[in-house]
Amino acid sequence: MPRVICLGEVLIDQIAEDAGVPYDQVSTWKPYLGGAPANVACGLAKLGTPVSLVSAVGQDATGADLLKQLGVAGVETSGVQVHPEAVTREVYVTRDTKGDRHFNRFNGDAQTVFADTLLSAEHLPAHLFVDAKFLVLGTLGLANPQTSRVVGRALKLAEENFVKVIVDVNWRAMFWKNPQQVAKLLPVLLRYTDFLKLTEDEAKLLFRLTSPAAIAQAYSHLEGIIITNGDKDCRYYLGEKQSKHPAFPVYSIDTTGAGDAFLAAFIHKIYHRPLTHLQDPQFADEVIAYASAAGALSTLDVGAITGQPNDRQIREFLAMREAKH
Image 1 (cartoon, helix red, strand yellow):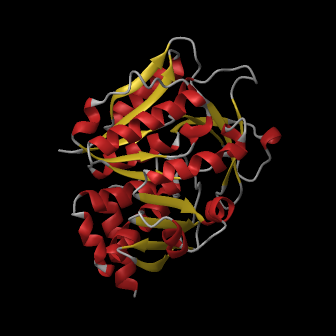
Image 2 (cartoon, rainbow, N blue to C red):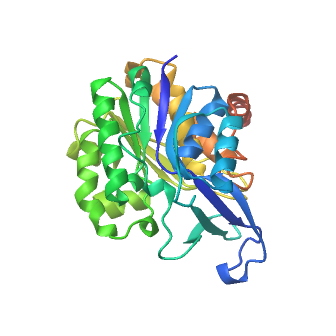
């Protein structure tokens, strides 16, 4: 079966056990597998879509543990490189009382070199692209020259093998030495992009536009644009039509990785059908409803992976909502 390739960081989210407490008052932290591309890969595996992760970890206990967790989750990891000197990254995450998360700092100090910044383009497994259907990546790979080269090579391989490219902007200024560089690099990435997902805040910041149709006008080659807006709604442009779907209200515990669960479910739905089906507004709305349900359900537990739903849970959740109406 053709696979989905997720490319980018895998790391540890050290999530504060105490919600609503500032960083310096947190009493205990709990480690969870994280990193947007890794979260999406785990979400896809849970839904039953074949997926490979291309990433890098350090030759440390944390890296070994992440590889083990990915394997248990059903993610194929032959593309995960192990760097002998660099450290596996950990990010400290606090939560407010509504479950909304805030990234505070990384492990180590200013001199620490993280494995995810040293992914090697030479060791990118080209064979994975031969039978792949989608390549999924974010913008963090553009944050330094070495991983930028990997992104460039992956995009070339995707083009040669007719693999559709899905970009989730996932803007994280703290990962960049020079955050303003994104203004130069993002347009290059978008040239290769088929589907673009971003949040309302990212759309304002990077495009100064909040309408998917307006972004589609500026980048006419894009086949789909999805703008999520937390617990409010999701606006999308699919099949050359713009529409929106309300978010499902749930009592969120932790929103870490909700966008990744959304994206995994979106990809899972379009993976199993010809992309031309997105021309049907009813199918497009069904896909977004399914993805929105996955995003909502993922916030009912702590950590990006723990709460990721399977297909049955999503369908039951949607059936219950239908029954209420």
